[in-house]
Amino acid sequence: MAMFENLSDRLSHSLKKISGKASLTEENIQETLREVRMALLEADVALPVVKVFVDGVKQRALGQEVSQSLNPGQQFLKIVQAELEHVMGDSNEELNLAAQPPAVVLMAGLQGAGKTTSVAKLAKFLKERHKKKVMVVSADVYRPAAIKQLETLANEVDVLYCPSSPDQKPIDIARNAMQSAKTSFADVLLVDTAGRLHVDDELMNEIQQLHKAVNPVETLFVIDAMIGQDAVTTAKAFNDALPLTGVVLTKVDGDARGGAALSVRQITGKPIKFLGVGEKTDALEPFYPERIASRILGMGDVMSLIEEVEQKVDRKKADKLAKKVAKGKKFDLNDLRDQLQQINNMGGLSSMMEKLPGMGNMAQMAEQAKMGKQFGQMEAIINSMTPKERSNPEILNGSGSGSRKRRITQGSGTTLQDLNRLLKQHKQMGKMMKKMKGKGMQRMMQGMAGGVPPGGGIPGGGGMPGGRMPPGGLPPGGKFPF
Image (cartoon, rainbow, N blue to C red):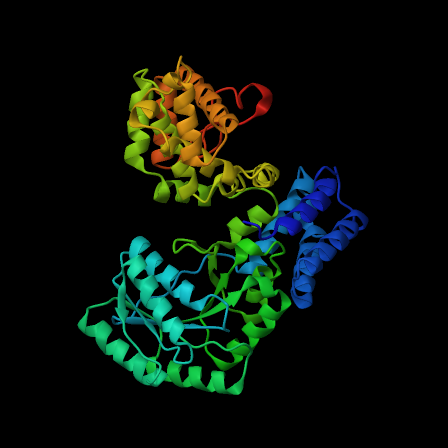
């Protein structure tokens, strides 16, 4: 996640200097807080929020809490983390869907904030994680394309869609949808509304009328994180006009500053409930202030990684590979392709690494090294091989293998150098697998297939795509074997 990249770098640099101090004085606290204040302002955090945060840290740091601590520097870091969480909302607040079905969720926001996509993402989230029967409807009569877009997305995520057309009134559309949701026995109805390029009286009046007509259990404000300070101003305008219950912050993967996430809760008093972290329909995460605070301070976010592994790793494939390698069977190119696909399902290597404590810089290095592109290329090469070549890669190094290699590189649009690199990397991984055969391998793959493995290691922790760090840490040379 690009969000907080700059802030995280600045804060960890400032806090490193103070966390090693044997004692804290008003002077060294003031100096650090001055740097923290500058870092927050540069990250586009609203001034009143910066003031509340800095005052909160200062008050606690100069109080009894630190002076009686065995390690004042680390205690100061804990205070900063706790205050960050507090500014963002203390804990995750789920949607309140405890209502007579269908529970109506109204989505509001400016044009271009990502409302329609967020409706589809939320529908998929409620269907898959909460096992709800969901219906979606578009009341955006000003943009026929938005109605069509929602229909397409509803089909993609496989939820009920209530048709609407530009010649209808938004209130009539919403009422029809409520009736349709009742007869279809839907648990939740998500209503997409019209956006404007800016806040105006006409928009506010229309959405207030719509709100009155459908009486939603949740009114979510969808906001683009990349508009920085403006995000907070817009959120405030909507909050004054509507009884908002929460915020969905979109495009956070494109915002390196993250000021909106730190400001919205404090300014509106409404919790951020979800983060939109990409364009795919599964790119929606519940917002956990404690996890985000941990990420900002470079401490990783292991809980989110574990949840991701549990949801997105194919357990059958993980178990199959564990049993195969435990029996001493060969790790072939079909297995390598499966591993590359597992990493891709989890948002790529850099997305996994940035959730591990102390691995944020390595995640950036992986990004800069264009590892995602490299993985795609590796998969294309494997796909260009015959089933026999995938199962027996050694035939690609035997006599008369030149024509085979030419066919593979032409089919995948790659070079002979790319193919030879893949074969070498596969061979290295095969050697590592051999060393880990037996119980070690099984424990690692079971960890992949279901949370934290016996012994408390972290799934997805490097060493091999999707696996745990091998015994003894990284391979010789300190490089990942892919």
